[in-house]
Image 1 (cartoon, one colour):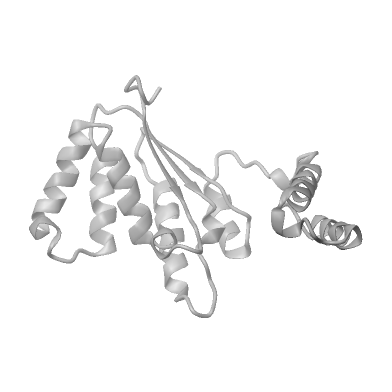
Image 2: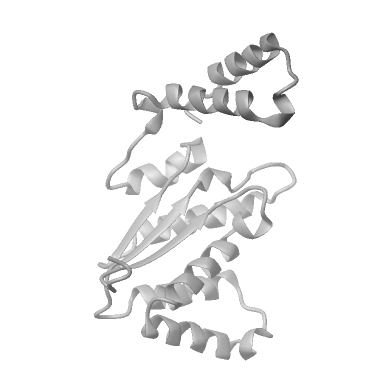
Length: 192
């Protein structure tokens, strides 16, 4: 559908190992870049934003980025926009990260899910940690918990076995050690 121009699609994977992929600026910037490649109207809006900020040399706020995205979402007569935010729980809340980073992402997601953009479709994937649950559950149209799906733990255990038995670094391990790793990890997966 995207290739045929019937929808626009932007995807963002939150990753705690990559500074750019764990905060609001990285998320919205990525969505804007992806969307501007799918529509001349979107590209015009992003180009205007870029020009208004001295061709990128003048600093802009996260709120300005969000406003640019909202402008795109509010354009009339555009195909539906599908936004996917994957692994939201990867936005960290550790002591070395300001909690405001995750909170900003959560408020952005709440803002989108409660918005009145008729062509916006949003999918968020995450483990339901308490702060995420508070934001996501009230605004979810449809929720699926893979932790409750049959076969989830078996799939994870199969993957662990595959890695343990095929990884060259683990090749020299004793059979008992391999089984211990498989058993401990399999029993602690908790839907992960």
